[in-house]
Image: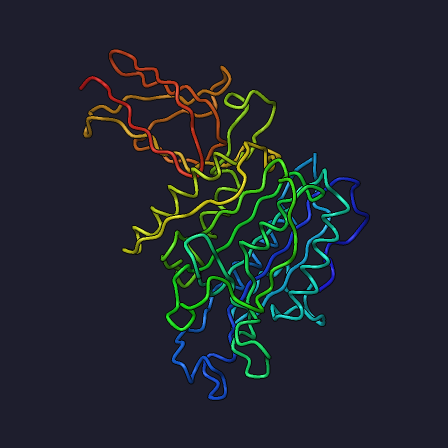
Length: 378
């Protein structure tokens, strides 16, 4: 569909492409090779929703004064009954916005044109849906009309994400690029004879690389990418990180604001995706490709909020000592009960416990949750 961003474009900005596929109508079509050759895949229920949440974040929360959001192209194929983010759904009603081959080709071309006109800008790409790999360094997104028996080539309704990324990593394209692909990377026996998919969408490109173009994949080679009933593990971790969990404050980055930098986001995703997978008793770990250069991806308008929990050790103290929470030499809270739970802006704090002897601790409170135990004399 056309750029959904209203208003004039900044001279230098961020150009975003978001694709989410849950609905695959040909998975059970008797006329499709998917059925005749036993290519079994389930329908998805949260991929389009995840993509709409990322698009809504870009529209309402993305903040980068050096490269404000300049264009946002969104293609979604939701499953029946799948909830699409309320900020995005009205913008897609009445327009061609399904993530099918022809529409994806059109929007990829338009996205490339946006980017060519803005080499000092930034590119942001996020895709989610069923995925496959043909080699250990490939990643493919299956589009909604994958398996359509009317297609001349059986695998033409697929986006070759790694080839697309490589084509964009070339002089004359945005010098800063960040790509995310939330999809499985397992190999299919029926496609084992190919090292690339003839007919898959794979734009031309090449030349000297740009300053930074990183592709972060939700799963490493041969792995699945998992989801719960509320969304995918990777996108949950990604949005947490972009909203501040992967941020660094002024004390750490030497600036006057909170920032999300590439290295910190990679580290956050690696740890958080692994933790979420562990909670679901599955294995999932991210993979990173491309040209990696430490860069500021975005800034935060204010310090992110943190769920802070303060505990005393040993437990069962009687009487309980009182305490204070200070920030920038000012008392912001008095503590009379332990554990103390509250939501605070991220940053440096001084925790004082008026035990005997008094205990003072300086802590760097980081999002999204921060638990801290203070040892006191019994």
